[in-house]
Each structure stands twice: as structure tokens, then as C-alpha cells.
Length: 378
Image 1 (cartoon, rainbow, N blue to C red):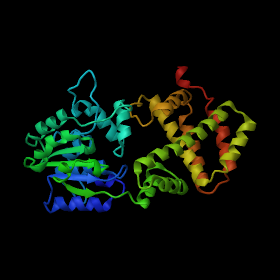
Image 2 (tube, helix red, strand yellow):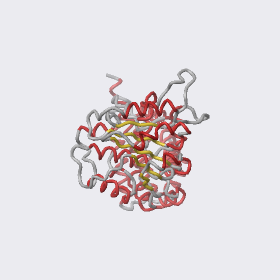
Image 3 (cartoon, rainbow, N blue to C red):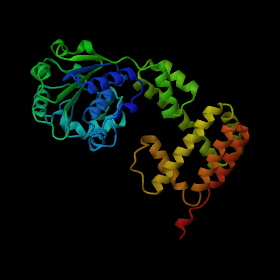
Image 4 (cartoon, rainbow, N blue to C red):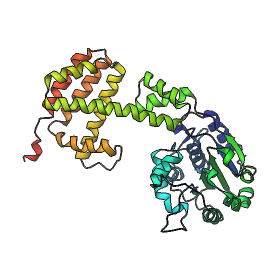
């Protein structure tokens, strides 16, 4: 992960980059910011910058061997620790036993929260913990010299889940071995042991600026200005909360698109005209969003039909819908479907009459979805 991928927090980015460039790197640091402020993402980007082989003035290069490994969280000198729950089958478990799930969770969303992580572990009804055995394993891991990079780095996420067992780490935190950097990422500083706090340099991470969240929502999630502003207001600087609220918008697009497509396929004229009239009233930005959502769904259908369904960009109910719809999207109609959607987008962007645009698209989609797959007949 690079700094430029992180939403906002420019002041924090500038600060940590400056400490590296001036060779003022603290061996034990505490990144303290409330949920959704990007503490974990910043720690990962900072770790990548520390071991980058060709760092830029304001970011890691993103292209060297070290950056490529860090981007996948597989660099041999990048270590993690996090809360987990001991399974009855193995009371000697350590965080490394859950590393595959951790990588999947963080690469999927570096703004994940504690509950999301427990869901990934399938232990929502249990309490996470960082055990005494885990602490001893950390000491063992960090006793080794760096394998490839300049620094050996530990990122401990949520040290507030260290009980008195955390005292096992005090000597390590106070006097880590040379070329070792320990980054504790907390969302609740008051719950971290005082004996640990006193051994760290604390970096406070403020809530994300409203403008930065709004720009991310518009540019990364294709939301309208009004939708983005509503989510900014409700999220209160918490990007994880914003992501949850985005899902509500996406669910609405999904419901609207499925209802429309069903009427196109069934060719129910009266109901379809009524639906088109409703689409004409939702505003131009929402109309473009609706069409872009449709384009995305049909692209996924084409990918699945070409055996490229392992990308994992859709899942759950959406994946089930795409798999069923893909049976009606094939070489005989897929190009025309994409062309009709792009044409509709073109006209809506240029203030075309939405009733005419959507009615025309609806009629053509009803015809195209009925086109037989010629390849199955040969």
C-alpha cells in the first residue's frame, strides 16, 4: 500500500515521511486514531516506505521488489499481530495461524474494524485477545535479523486487547534490536496498558476531513454529490462507517436495476412504461449511476462467460444474480448490449430526454436478451 492510496491524512503522511528522510525513526511508535481514520492503512504504507528500494520524495515507488511484496503483505520482514480467539482444537494458536485470513481481510479493506475482523474469523460471538503465547512468539520473530529489507517491522493492530500479558513485551518495546520498527495501531489509547504507552512515541491521527471523504466517495464509488454529502454527514470522519453507508446506495441501485431488467425480459409494456417514468424522475446523476451499474453487471457476465470469474469483484447475492444473468449474455448479443448502454450514457450526459432514452433502451434490451446463443447451436 502506498500513501497516495490512503484517503486524506496528508499531515500525518508528511510527518512520517519527514522522519524517515531525516533519519529520525522511532523504534517503537503508537498510531492512535479512532475507528475508520486509517491507522492500519497508514502503518502499512509507512512500512512499505521504510523498506522501499527506490523511495520517492513523498511515497514509496510501488514498483521495486520490496514494494511488490509489501503490497501483498508477504514481505518476509513485515510481521503482524492482532486479536484472535483460541480455538478449542488448538490452545497454542498464534496470530501467524490466521495470517491467510488476515491478508484477505486487510487487502479487501484496510479500513476494516474489529467486528469485521471477528466476522472474518467466524467468531462474532467471542472476544478477541492477544495472548501471552503470542507475545512470546513476537519476541522470537523480532529477535531475527532482517531477511531482505533494511528494517524488520511489526505492526500490532489493536494493542488494547493486550491484557497484563502485554508486560511480557516491555523489554522488547523499550529496547528493540537494531533495525527494528514496532508500530502499535490503537483505536482506544485509554485501554492500552500505561506501561506500554510510556515506551512508545505517540502519533495522533485525527478524523478524516469531510472534503477528503466526499471526494473519495465520488471518485472511487461513483456516488452523486448529494449521496456523497449525505454519507459524509452521517459517517462523521469514519471511512469504515462511510463504506457501510455506501452499501445502502449500492443496494438501491441493485434493486432498481433488477426490477427494470425483469420487466425488459418479460416485455410487460404497461409496467415498463411506469418504471421508465420513475427512472426519469431520479435525477441525471442517479440515472448515470444506474447505467454505469448496469454496464458493470454486464461486464461481469462477459468475464464469467470467458472463464475469468476468479477476480472476485462481486460476491454473495450479486454474484448469484450475475451468474444467472450471464446465461442470457453471449457472443450473439453482448457487444450490442454494451453499445446500447454506452449510447444511453452518452445521451443522458448530454441532457437527452430521459423518458425517451430509457424507453428506447428498455425495448432494445427486451429484444437483445431474447437473442439465441448461436455458439450453442454449432
